[in-house]
Length: 111
Length: 116
Image (cartoon, rainbow over all chains, first blue to last red; front, side, top):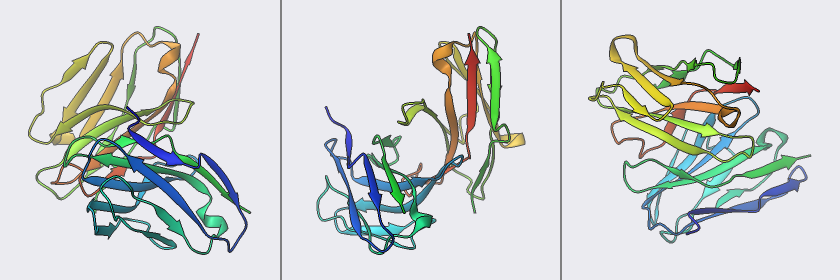
């Protein structure tokens, strides 16, 4: 049982490059989330989705885009990477209001 | 707006001591949910407990216990007879009426160090 799978685990980007962080869950959860965790800080919500085709902004959406074409996948897109986006990114999923299950995170550095 | 405050940035105790991690929250919702997550050095987030605003009963799970007090907007977490394996960052989080379905608001975390 894989749960929530995030790829890649680590990535270094140059300023201005773009990339997509992948997230997949195999628990048939309807809700999915992207958070970022800066050093010494708690997690902040970037985007979330309540089902395929439906997404909404969280607290810190600027500089990111998401899509949800299937129940299983919720990719996060960075179009023009900036140093301020250096962070650890966590994807999570839940069934309705049940506790969120988190992936292992993607550590992203932008230089 | 929702807010979670974990005033203790870092706590260091010797193994077998009891330790309490504080969590104070702010919300305008009448129905809300509180969570604790553990983040060990390996980095993953482990769910520990969820409590809704209508249930103020304290909960105990092995060496872990939680004290929820609506009157002081606090949801504190106590580890009894701490062990080295308890060393981690602990996050308190708040979810709104939907139980956190529209995302959680996290505190900054408390780094707990258990010394042998």
